[in-house]
Length: 138
Length: 138
Length: 81
Length: 81
Image (cartoon, rainbow over all chains, first blue to last red; front, side):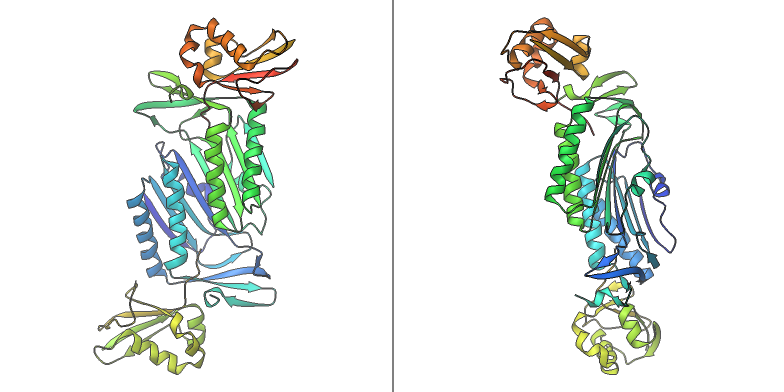
């Protein structure tokens, strides 16, 4: 079971955990990325996410398929927010369910690493004194 | 922040996520172990966990301290159930929060691996036809 | 032929639009379009080597030849998660 | 001297108790107590090498010498998680 969502609304983890949960799952591993109050010495107030929606959905599905083909996974759920995300809120959630925790850890790590490399999403951090597109930094 | 709990009641993940959450966390990684409906070809109905409570609490705290000393972690929460845990229910939850996902993945993995090696907890699986202490199997 | 251009994040801020249609000559390559934009926007000149491109929602090389009806996206390094 | 014994999981089922006090001679070692239990319970005989022990809630070697008031726990390999 694979679910990829790009949504404006806050993410409800209880809903996510229930979505197609199966008694054969064995274990869930959930990665939650949250907006942090500081970034390289600046005080963050919120983040605006820009997203190339159609392409992001394609890439996220491809990454999920790659993870599935390399690991025994019962569930993969990837949810990324767009628009404004405030302090402490979840910007991304990745859930993988597997009978084997090796598979869970490796695939979860693979998914977040690949998302950060190739999914067309950009964050603009807002500080107490200004704002900055993070992609320009590197 | 470190919290180790051994409890009979079901685990409420929303409560866990809120416990001492900080806006500097960056990311949460949550491992959830669940009772699976099958185990080596047998149909599982539920699991009874036996626990050496005082020693388990000591070992869990020690494992959490080891993880903290090797990784930059803002939060560690470890909750293990005892007594009867039914199909699909969470038997163990491990949450680590860190500004760095490397730390989250490595420390979460370390914690679950060490728990399975050294914390004095034993599961008795109940099947449609009988039961078995799992520790005797190896 | 006719193609659609999409730009995102800081590139959109610089260009002042998010999407536009262009009439271009046949067999034009991605890098020729990118050059056009870089020449037209001083702020982009130092960043040309960091720009990423996708045609019809798939990452592409700069020497890819465009076809009629293609959507070309030009954007900076991604920073999701 | 007086020590407390605790047993868990399958070992408890076999022994028929979970905790008991014993009066033992001074300087007795952990393995001597374990031997006592194994001799008294045929079902334990094949499993002696798999048994784990802890004194006062800390894992210990089989040759550890017990002291008055110690709590010795004897249990099978753990299987939590």
